[in-house]
Image 1 (cartoon, one colour):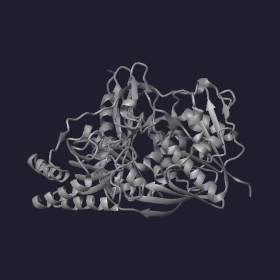
Image 2 (cartoon, one colour):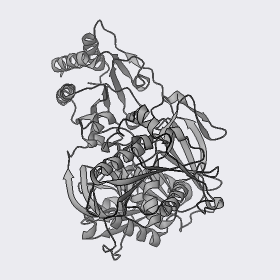
Image 3 (cartoon, helix red, strand yellow):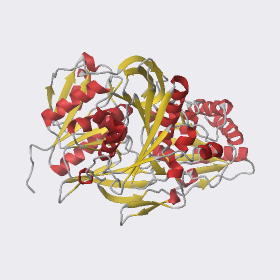
Image 4 (cartoon, helix red, strand yellow):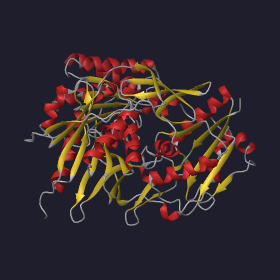
Length: 264
Length: 334
């Protein structure tokens, strides 16, 4: 049997764990300006990478990571190689800027059809910047393959995937023939630790870079998000801090205060 | 103004729950009604499932037209079938705007419908309005982990919107008495490759119905800590009717608490009377799920934790000391 091929789509985003102050809003230009925080691989895409690497260990597979953007940071995305991905492909073009979900899915699907073959495509459930949660499923629609959303576990047996997908009151176990696309949720687990050593060891690995022309993409046909306005979203309440000589006393005083304010 | 144009339509997908209407349905109807009023459009509803007649009359009270597909194949949610039939309804009704709840099922359904219809989709919106001069839809959603609010202008119709629960008021009364239109499209199962093998039931809790939530976060290190929170929940049940344990994402990802209890961007959106956050630092992706709570109490040993910026009451201290004292005092009082 030929080797299993897994593709993981990874997006570069400003670190979503960064403090609110690190996300400055240029309301005029309708742009978000990250200040003092590094870009990272979208955390949900890291969950997808981890799923791919586990499958590689269990079933043997070649794992290819693809990232798309206007300007990509190789050092950031090389983390995928250090974690154990075999190939990294970057789709970089000035026209790949502020794209809507459909255009993003369209470019990624064009690239995926260029990869010699694929059995499983993994994406994060949503990106930590715009939080749409649409692109993964659209890729599957464009490739006309089945898709399974919100996986917490993925296994491969023979030529089928078995997925535990989140449901309102638990999870569903579903199965589909490959090729198939699966979007991964954080319940699947964090990406394994990547050491400086493994970053160094893979630093010489070539990274393939394609632009719009390489992929036969007409920039005129790409659509951007129609942003009308952009504002910081911040709530600041006057917090009443409960006093007390010890933590325990503060706890008691809290209840006394809540009773006084007729909340309990 | 051109007056009422009969051909404009807003289509709301009805959400059901345990045989009745899910609370979010009334929020969707309110959003739909507001847009319909601004556009002079009809408010239509779509309801899919099997043996759903019990809710049809209620939904007709809020709709100009109800489109109903009742078929045994739709008993369980299977996204491929739901996308197929909802697409058929959209082809028949030709709505300007399709409104759906931002539920786990619809996270799966809405993008597929958007692809079939070849239309734009904006997910997880908390506000919708019509730009009067153009009649374009403006929809606002929190982005960047809820640090920023972005408003999108949709110049093309139709479009699909999913709405975050608890972000909008539920609809009050309505004097509509819509016609119920039964559709009976052929449902094609043959093209579906994804097979459902088993439905694993976790806990069947309704976090969004709770009037009090005690939620734990990363600061709660172990099962012992969780037990303390559970005891607080039990004591509070003497006073409140619906008290539940909630959690921020780290506890769920660690497997200590089931997903159904997760509050936040990728979990439940809640708006209880009282929300007690214990050991939760207040990452915005958590805050976005609970900002609607009427009264927020934060217990955290870090006085600079962002949770205190949104809390009404704050206790700076180690939860392992604070929580037992709270439980003791509650037992005295309640």
